[in-house]
Image (cartoon, rainbow, N blue to C red; front, side, top):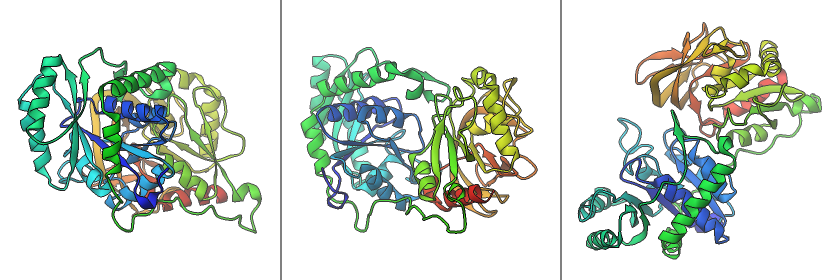
Length: 462
């Protein structure tokens, strides 16, 4: 194993555009290297929750996100080192095209920026299905666009034949970039999608494991694994001063409080309907002194005994609306906890679950609002400020977040809104009622650790 101080061997898997095969190559490479006995640290650029689930399945480790918009560029290295601690190699899957980032923000949150922050070589996955010699111009453009981005090799995807491969190799050789793999046109690995992207691992069971195994076999057969590992080892040390991020020390019990109150139990929604979460959130809650327990709103008929606070993240409640509605016992348990004034943090899917109804089906009824599916996709980074004091943040707290949904909640904000947005339009959004903070906005608490500490303290005192 390699210690963080000496520089974790690492690669960034990028592409000229979405749909080129990044996820197949990155996940397959993780699985292939894990199959060779390496401890592989999986990472994903951007706010995506779904790909890290496949990464975790491939490696047996938690998939972690690296988002320079949500967390700031200064946290990319530390969060990477935190996830890669004790690993032999790290594989980072990019987002969109290599140089695509937050709209109107230059390189911010792009794969290229993360690669530079990590001083990691990039492997460019090129969909070669409709080109031959032109691939040289494409690769040359990506190599020369930003001299600080080191493209160490190319993997050619969807190659038709031996002759096609020969033409492509000759073209790429003229640019001076090595071809590190060739994947032939084949029936795609079964990774079904729906309205927000790939179907999450938690919903697919053994089918997801079979898909990851197929990706691993495909990459192992078509790529030069030794050359890829060698490129990763050439990454060298991270920028000076980088140290692993830490959620902070676990506090000791307050002498004037009972053990129960000193270590409040925080229930976190999981299961197939609520799969969107960042691993750092649970780590921050535990470091703030909470006992973190997971429950499944599709199966558990009541909240865990002794629950003092509730976190309901993102996911797909719209897909499981009937099952969630049918679990009347849990809906009642959630409503009783919220009405008691206990802290409840709900993001996106959690917001829908707390509404009166979702697509006409009864939900928890904590919020006097109705939710429904929509044809319109709401997607993008947001710069937000807390409008109302809540269990998560004091009024005036600034945070960056991300919206990603095809649903509508009416009304969109309560009498005490959760957030005020500056872009793409000025508006208020979300609900703060009693101990409830409910909003569409996904946030990454590592950027503002005080959020978790405040939430746990409210759990102690509510």
